[in-house]
Image (cartoon, rainbow, N blue to C red; front, side):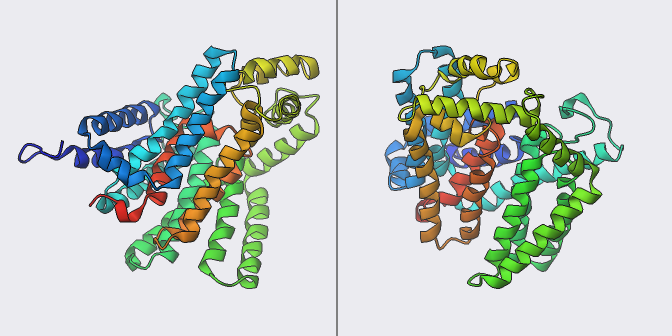
Length: 409
């Protein structure tokens, strides 16, 4: 459907505008993100031109790796017995099929707007966070706070802090690694980095704080490209300065670190605590992997198999039996699909790194930071099933790894 009424935008243009709106809204509202993604898919289907769209993605390994990841979950149905939970898992993971769709929706001239929309949403969330923290804003129910003491609006700290960490990296990238940014915008970026960076350590997300330090270290190496000793020393200095300072001067960071250490050391006495449960879930999951090393338990049998081994090993740790994953993506894939699952997930990272190596795009530094970011956070939670981190993966992954020569103008 290439023709459109005079004065009205084409479906192609409309879909790109919807993607800008999606980039701004998906962190603010799960419902809005789902509706916009559904509309993009609907208009993409109505638009047709499937042969042309196929040509855009047929040689893109990232698109096909995303499809293979979803395909693995359908293949795993062959050795699944719990079809209800399998349907739940598929509902979460089928979204990765949107990668090739979004790659054909992107418009070259709109790429800055997609990224600015995402930045604007995080600036808004950080502003609200400060408002709640300083007592300027009441903790309205619409903000969806888990606790007033953890001012992470609309999403919990498990999501808020990692996304904030990547946003901070993107600000550093824009200020120091992009040449076509005016000094006024660079100055604004530095101010935002400072304000948003402080907010990182006023909220409770330990993984976000850790991945921020890792991305900061990566940025130092990228800034001093081609050198090793100097960036290594600077990165080390930054880490050994920021981490202790955050521990000493932020009560939130100090309490969360101390709590994590205590819960890990006493996981048997506090089996349903946050970190204690993580230890127990890993131990139970390792037993499942040992029992099913090659193909795992299937797409939908994790929960029932986990409950079985948990009753044998840690029957008092009941909280883990109702969760959908073991809080570690690599372990999750091994439990579900054995070695095959780890290979498919590893291939997804492999193609991102290969595309990074071959790229001459101005986004090349981000193309390395992106898989590093997910590689790290995947150790701490089931982020591959998380709504917000999945949408971030779809959006940024499509932008970073699309074939630049085949982008729509």
